[in-house]
Image (tube, rainbow, N blue to C red; front, top):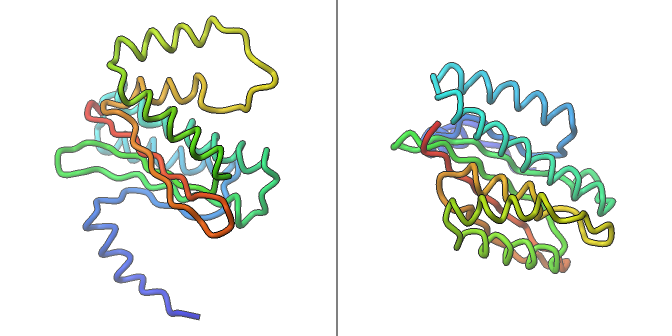
Length: 183
């Protein structure tokens, strides 16, 4: 087994201004604990209450989506693992980045939906959110990419960014990033 270079990992985290980082299986209690740490960090950094709430709400939505997807797909603990990073750049913007394994067709649909949302301005996102609220829930449609994704897009100060890394097993490693300038 390769020796873990914690000093280099720490240097990378400092250089990239990482506040919180987690990689592994994600449970409801873990989402809660990381959420408490995130709230404390935002409080200590004197983030605006509204901005801090946006960061926290998007963190919760992202991580719960990963957890629900892994459960729905009956992924093993290893396959259901997530990578979660919260960082702050030189301009003071907070960024939440998450990644997880997703079945390739689901990943493609999700990527397309995020690209569609990225093309909308704040007024259009608000209108789409209200329209989605009024729609009856389709029991046959796959969960996800509905209200939660719209809410994340509305709360983020920049368009959501997503990418896919194809895996040899027919799945993709899906990455999603939200940026918050007003926190």
